[in-house]
Image (cartoon, rainbow, N blue to C red; front, side, top):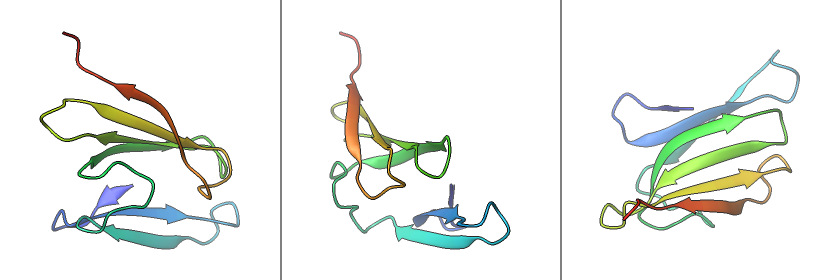
Length: 88
C-alpha cells in the first residue's frame, strides 16, 4: 500500500497470476469506504496471501481509538476484529 505523491489517496496493487502482472487500485482520501469507520484514517495494511488481509484505521482524534478489520475471502467481505482504545 502507498499514498500518492500528494497524500490525497490510498493505493494498493493486486495480482491474480503470482506476481507476473499487477493491477493498481486507488481510493481517494475524501471518498468514504463502505463498511469502514467514518472519519477514520488509514494506518496500515498487511496481507498473508491472496485471501487473508488486515487493515488498521485510526478513529477520530478525539477518541484515540484504532480499528482492525480483516478479510478471509480476498476482500469481498471485511469484519471488525477489534477496537484498540487508549488506556485510562
